[in-house]
Structure formats: C-alpha cells, structure tokens
Image 1 (spheres, rainbow, N blue to C red):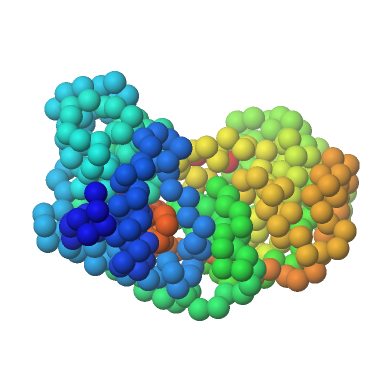
Image 2: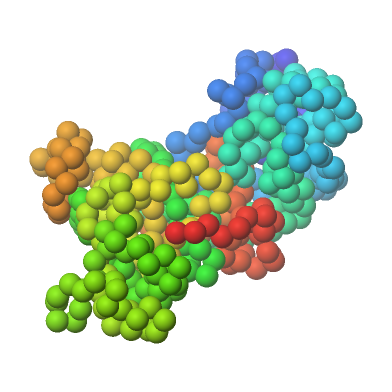
Length: 414
C-alpha cells in the first residue's frame, strides 16, 4: 500500500483508533506503516500513550477527534450490534460478522483482518483495543459492559468530546515541570515530568454519593506506616451499622476507641444502637495488611480533607468499576508513586522507602519540592499516540444523562 493510496475514510479511522499522528502528512505515513506491520494480538492491541492527558498535544488531538467523529457521523456512524453476553476466540456466526463490522468502523479492527464470521486473533486484538479506549479490562472477549460501550451512539460520543475539549482548554497551559494528575472518571493517576508521562496508576475514587472533589494543590509530605483516624461521616454511615452486625469488627481490625479525655475504651462500653459513637475518636493502628491507608498516606492540603493513600484491598485495582471510596483516592503501585514524588528529596531513594515501610515505624518524609497535584474530571479525550478515549460520566457532570456502563455496576463495599 502506498502512502498516497489512503482514502479520507482511512485517515478518519486512523484518528479514531490512535494509529495516526496529529500532523496530516505524518498521519498518512504512520497509518500505512501501521497497517502493513500490524501483528494481531494483545501485545499491540492496547496503545499506551506517553502524552499527558492535560497538554496542548491532547487538546489538539481531541479537537481533531471531534472533526473525525463528525465526519464519521455524516457517513452514517455505527449501528447497534446484537451480541451474546459471552463471546470470544473461536466463535463463529452472524454476531461475529456484525462485531467485526462495528470494530472496523472506528478503526479498532484493521483492514488486513479481512471479512469473516470467525472470532480470530484480529478480532480479539481489536476488542482489546476498544476495551482499552473505554476503560474496561482488556480481556479481548465480549461481555455485557463491552456490548453496552459498543452501542453508545456516536451522537453521545461527539457531545462527550465537545464537552471535554472545553475542560482540556482550561488545563492546556503550563502546569509545571513535574506534576500529578488524577482523572476521577477514569480512576487513574499519572505523574508527568518534562512533558511526558513518567508513571501511570489505577486508582480507587469516591462513590457516587461520596464524590472525590475537583482540586488544585501541592503535595508536601508522605507519611509511612500511618495510623488512620476514621472520619465522622464514616463513623455515622459505615462504622456504627457495621458494629451492630459484627460486634468484633473494631477489635479484629485493630481500631481503638479514644474518649474525649484521651483514654481508650472498650467497644462493649459503647451503645451502638444510638449515636453515642460519634462522640469518640476511632484510630486504626499502623499496618499495611489491615490499615485502611495501607503502608502510605500522601498528604494533599485542601479544604475537603481528602488525601491519597495505599490500601490493603489491592484487588480493587483489577476492577473496571473503581468508585469505591468516601472521597479520598487509593493509588495502585504506591511505592513507585512515592518514589517518583521523593526522587528529588535527598536520602529518599527506593531502597530507603522499602526499608522504612518494612520497619513498621511511623515516619514522615517532607518533599523537597512540593509537587503540583490536580484532581480533574475528564470523560473524553484523545492523544496523538493513544487513540480516542472515553470514560463513563459517573458523577453526571457532562449533563448527558446516566452513564451507560456504570449503570451495570453495583456499589462496592469499603
């Protein structure tokens, strides 16, 4: 295939899937090379962008994606597909043919995959790529959440992009040479250094009824092996009901009750059928295996009283639906995260971090150059090397109605 043989439609598909760069001429060359050298399979199905989400490059790519989606809509967009809720490699039939057609429309399935009614490695790779673009686990197999995401109308996707390009313009200026961005609807955290993503982390963020706030601050300090003081809202909403059902809950989780005078009292001394517990302080001992903050708390001064932290419940990071907290943010691979935060602080290399955590002692580390931190809300964006990304509007801030995929999920217990 020559560089000049690509049609306008192929260029649009390149923009949709992330196969093309931002500039028009390089887009043709890169798309041609991508189509020729594509190796079907999970290794290449998921494109990992090193472009920061808050950047001029992302803003430009998102503006181009809007044009591409409008172009695609004018050509008929895509139609809903009727698929079984479980389908994967080796499946055959009309449903697979419909799936291939749907994935081809947005460039997730490459042209060299051909036409077939077989769920082959090309289809599996295309499904992985689509799942990555909408924030689902990249299994390469069809499930209910993937079907719902496939069937979101193109008109809604365009409105998502139009809404979020305004947000991206707000953040397209100079955010600092080193900074942290937590995108709440994506439930992800990325660290950025010198204009490139340094590390990326899954996160657990606030439930719909206990939302993580939007904020702009700086991270001044990391606390190792912290205690956890239970917030008043959690005492009322969670702890009192829990104690009514499980009287040994506090003891088993090493949570102490501290009276206003500073003394410790036994759980049996509290009337759990009243609001008496709200008069006390509840403090959990340090311990990464059971403490709700895990091994690390990252302080972020704000009027909301929220912060970032580790968690003993690391299984949540493998879930698609990570809206599980009371407003604070749990961070995957927290040791890598704090190592990046402390990299310019003398005496705090990775070996020192591991040593302090292993000691079990409470230690505070002041960051030499407090790192700017932004908690933002972006449900649609594009990057030159990462394709067009969509996430559920979990807090209904886009004004487009209930989020499609999130409606399938239940609330997770904390």
